[in-house]
Length: 245
Image (cartoon, rainbow, N blue to C red; front, side):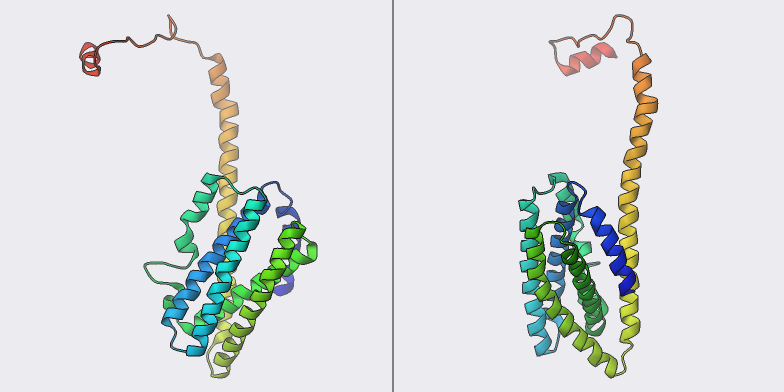
């Protein structure tokens, strides 16, 4: 699946990063994802019973907090995103962070499956950033930021892979768990695509309806006899209502 995904990322990135305003949106989405990951790791710090993993989870959380700040800085440097757009992205933060029904991702999955999720997500991020760096997208300053972040992501992949391999050696079905998370990420990506595509198509058809129905009707419409009349001034609103009754 890695070869197919890299090919898709190579093609998609050449288009996505070159659309005006799109780099800011992508980087803002990365910042939100890193912030959500930070919350996941802090939950893992609180709930794990293994001291050595607690230290790694905490370091991971600090890394993600720093990454969110770096991505947000690049968004501001590139001009930022609209306030309404930013509010819509931020409104889904609890769901994006994996907090559903008051439970965090760690609480719902348990430690071993949580680690397999971390490994899949971090390995995908490494693959994604390597494609962007290889294509030198979107600009030298952002590439330098991605290169800094990539060093931390490689550590995240390394420790989570070690834990996944340890659990697999103990007889846990980690391959099945990772496959489930991979396909869940594909499905979530498809849902995001259909949501964005539906929003754009809705806007397109509303525009077509306006041009073909509303605008021609307005052109041929005529005012009432006598034209528009200004409302009478003076008197209270209650008096005006009584006169109309």
